[in-house]
Length: 166
Image (cartoon, rainbow, N blue to C red; front, side, top):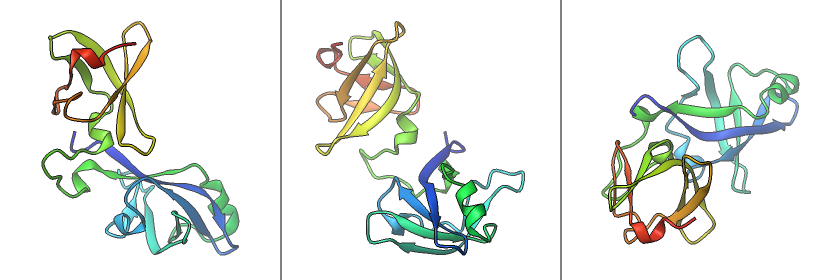
């Protein structure tokens, strides 16, 4: 789990003509990115090294990478996810989780029944909601609250049976 790549932002287009890019952020704002000097650094020389990073004032960010010299190169990166290794992220407090840690976990009911696999985590404003896909392809959603999901770890996500309705 510690080496799994975690997506923190995505390049959504060029900004200006000198190679800067606009970023869509998936974390707690631009400050959560500033601790990292490189993204996508998993060997093979394809890292993007940060030269400059600033808030765009609209919930996103503007970045300049050493490898991107002009607008054409910036546009070519549109859609690129900016990732870091899970082990590079700060440790979590009790009851906290990174979405990447939940994705792919088997879901099990508190009665011991296999329910499926966590395929998505959404937040529509009232808190996180976990989406589980059953073996038959059907999906159901469960609020990520203690009364619905009393426990999770690296092995499984435990869901109270009354929340497992299709």
